Length: 88
Image (cartoon, rainbow, N blue to C red):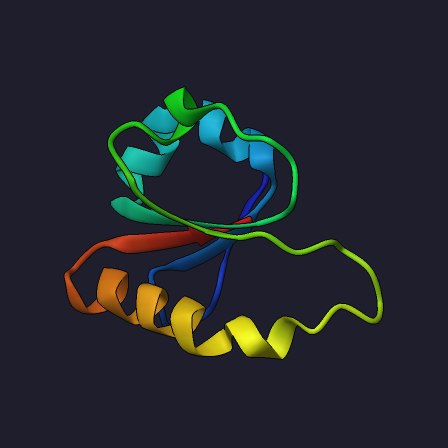
């Protein structure tokens, strides 16, 4: 499982398959998961986590900036609540 930690924060970047390693996610105290993709998701993968989805295509001209206020608020909520956040 590939899970990279952002220095100085309990914020992690990883792929979709990192959600299958729930033991490691629990070890890192991950409580929030931010998904940035348009694929249909298996809700069972997110059981036990607060989940937020940004439904946007991974293309060069996608207007991702419009989602920053909501995604930043979600990340802030997770970190300030004492948990960790996984962005994938």
